[in-house]
Image 1: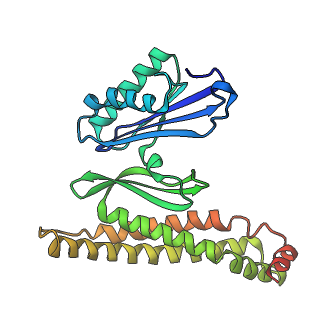
Image 2: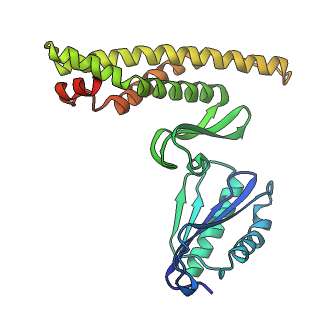
Length: 278
């Protein structure tokens, strides 16, 4: 029997060929034992049979946890993903929420796939016909702290270029942050205005982003052509818009990543920056 002091959160994900169920228990269980952080999960490949398999798998999950079939909160994967699977999961979660009288919350499927990692992470799902559902996140302590590129449907080559360019740019900016801070501090010490340094910073980031986006797009096109011809043996036609949009996306993402990574550089007192650099 579940203690009054415990809270259970049930998670349901049906947007992929796998049926993913999770149960997290927090609080104090029978006998006053702390059960904070206890977690149970079941992941089963079901293809398109989510509706048939979901009830039995859910009962098995609660049985494994030795808990009654009831949760205090339900979290459902809201997509992107299989339309049929998402509809099954949402309908079932809403039905349980109404029957149990508990809230039902939606979470982006790609955020759920990001997992307990740190840093910049590109996540994608197969969307068929050489497309993917993709997004890019920045994670801190396993939690999505910022969405760098929102979830959407992309051509596979475009998303490869976008993901590779953004991850490399963010890493490069983060690694060189201290050196940039020192350089800007010296320039400010000899009389350079902060507004001028911001303009220089933006121009440099935009230029680097344009170049990185263009190169990443060209490489992605070349890889796609090579795979199509030598691995999968089918006709493949590239689009000249990929390098164009890749360059523009690279510039925009470089400016965004640069703002995030360097936002405090020009606001830190010169003396403090130079003292840390010693």
